[in-house]
Amino acid sequence: MNRRRPHILLVEDYHANILVATAMLEGFGYDCSVAKDGREALDLVKNQSFDLVLMDVQMPDMDGFEATRVIRQWHKEQGTPHLPIIAMTAHALVGDRERCLEAGMDDYIAKPFEPDDFKSKLERYLGE
Image (cartoon, rainbow, N blue to C red; front, side):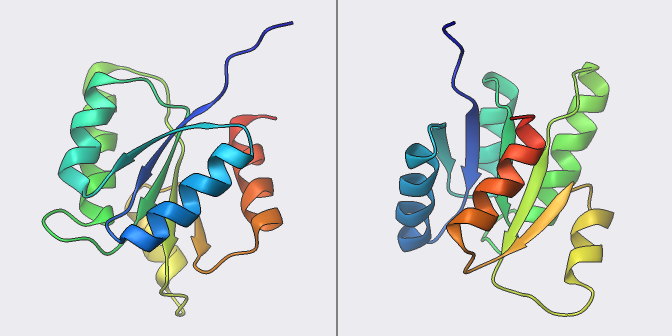
C-alpha cells in the first residue's frame, strides 16, 4: 500500500536547530517545511496542509505562543480539523509546559532532546 508521508511544519528561527531538526524529521520519513517566525508559520498553515507543527517558543516578530493562539483562532473560524502543535523550547523551567498548553499547544519538548523521545512524541500525535 502506498501511503502519504506526514507533512510537518517546523517553526524555528535558529539556523543550526533547523538543520538538526529537518535532518531528524527527514530521517524519520517525514516531509518537512520550515517557517522562520510565527507570521511565516501562519501564512504556511493558511495555504498548505500539515499533519503537525513543531513550534519554537522564542522567535522575533511573532513568538510561538502568539502564533499558536492565532493559528488556533484561524482554524476555529475555518472549521478545520485540529492541528497538533508541539512546543519546542530550550526553556525547561517550572511552569513552561503549562504556559505552552495554555497558549493552545498540545504538548511540549525541551531542547536538546533525544531522537528516540522526539520520534515517539511525533508518532503519538501522527497516529503511527
